[in-house]
Image 1 (cartoon, rainbow, N blue to C red):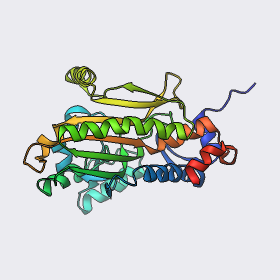
Image 2: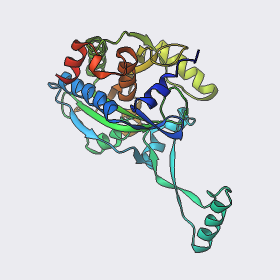
Image 3: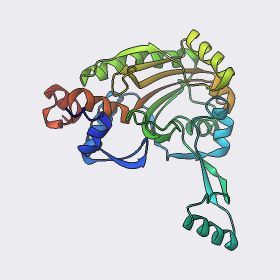
Amino acid sequence: MDAQPSFLNQLFDKGFLVPSGVDGLYGRGEAYEEVIAGFDSLITKTVANDAAEKISFPPGMSRVAFEKSGYMKSFPQLAGTVHSFCGVDHDHTELLAQLAAGEEWTGKQEVTDVVLTPAACYPIYPVLAARGNMPKGGVVFDLQSYCFRHEPSQDPARMQLFRIREFVRAGTPEEVVAFREEWLKRGPAMMEAVGLPLHIDLANDPFFGRGGRLMKVGQREQQLKFELLVQIANPAGPTAIMSFNYHQDHFGETWGIHTNDGGVAQTACTGFGMDRIALALLKHHGLDLKAWPKSVSKTLWG
């Protein structure tokens, strides 16, 4: 008897995802995008009264801002930089010969001023700092971006380029903590409305190296990060489809972001892994959208 195709191959066979030849890098079919659009609409309805400023960022951001953020200190293994050919005519001739011979051809590539966006919130902090002191009551942003992390895998829920919709709150400690507590209630309610079995757990980011181990412990001890987990395709356990993060004054100090009275602002964010949510829905409700529970379909598409 033939083995059951992997979930990834089932997604390929049904046209939800399109292989590119690189693990974690896929095209998206029409039905897959329909699922994404449905959940995106649910988010929009949920935040209708939040008065959040909506900004969509490209999948690339300033290298200067990226360096200042401290990302390379914590997650160098995940970062992606953009390089371009910077040679002259002779170098181009040599490059073409190397390509024709199947040899390494990247010798004249140099790093540009662009890096791949690692999380949807990273480009907003320099923007917010440049505006000066925040208004009384702080601010909320509704952000969207394709993001990149270098962790190739055949687990479809661990893509290298993926979409995040993220809400960032900046203000006083009381305002920021209240924001996160509200989302810790909202998030599970949204997932329950679309029929996803879930649980929330204390979590940590994948900090790199020996120093990173201490940061993981500190993040957990201070309860700075929670994740909403759903079983998708990893036999070892469930996958995070939402995260709830309290940055304290890290970004406020880094960028010089200030509250209305001039104090250092604190920040928190809630992130929706849009591709992971779509995959979770397909895994739990099946690959025939017309056969999904009526309550789920109504919640997503009305």
